[in-house]
Length: 103
Image (cartoon, rainbow, N blue to C red):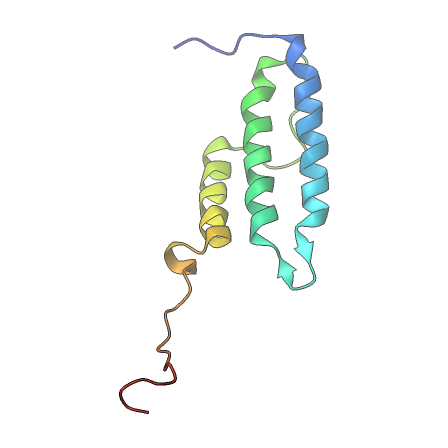
């Protein structure tokens, strides 16, 4: 496996990712707390920026913690929260329907 291939052409894409990260950061706090959909997207964008940055010469690190392993874990956790999977899955409830046998 080889290292990142430096390319200044990735600079504009990196800047767009940083702008999107900032916008998602402000949007993720909705009326009812932290929105899991925006937070999952935020971590995905952060992960993309962290992956792209080494390929851009003389670029500052992103303005957020940029451990790709940690970002990948956060993205997976918030994906589950957004999609209500795993420990975030809705708890099934017993529902009585009118007209059933015991009514």
